[in-house]
Length: 322
Image (cartoon, rainbow, N blue to C red; front, side):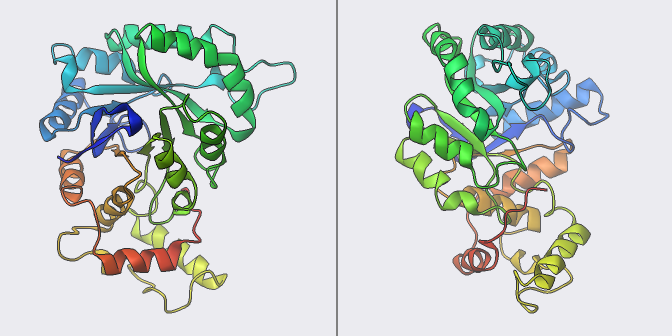
């Protein structure tokens, strides 16, 4: 396993990290708890040292707390998330008069996560799904509490995750780092073959200020599904975004699979990790075989230069989130 640093923190993190949310992960899988625990420990055996979860991922925090009991705390890093809109009971856009959560909501959230995860500190605490228009009121409302939690040693780093599908230009990352570059330690965003926008501003800005980037779901949706991928490519050809002969109609990204690239998904992971501004790439799985393949993909975290350059030429326009 290769390691990078989490931005200016100096903390070493495995290039591949394990996410416990989403439709393909064990949070949603009908696996016995013993099998989930085996999968989690397989991650640790591979050298994966960052485990990401959320208060909104079902019973994930409580399960992780039990499954990791007895494992030395220095072997792994924990990141979790607090969805500010859920604490207000809104489950969506703030309503008139709402203050983006009670002033004590963040401290309550951290206390609850610490209990469920059976630990005395969180390595990263994220404000989850932060909308660009909510950024300033959330910062004003909860920034002081976040600082108190850091001083008390309950959280080491603070971050925010972008709202997937609603912030394709990475406005919240750019705004947050521009306004408060020393406050935020980590941004969680999506950068991949079909989501290259972050390369233009968000990744360079984060690197300039030492803000770590956790790359979420870069190969979760279209890349593992050849039929859906072919349909999307065909639509881009039809609307003129791609030339008719840019890539084959059937298996449009199959040309990436050669040498040490085992699959289109593996190519997606390599592309996602290839930017030096990315600290770690999050993957979620309920399969030992899938996990092992993802680990192999990032043993060498870069594509052949010609393939990488072709992907940039072809898909730099793409803002696909599904």
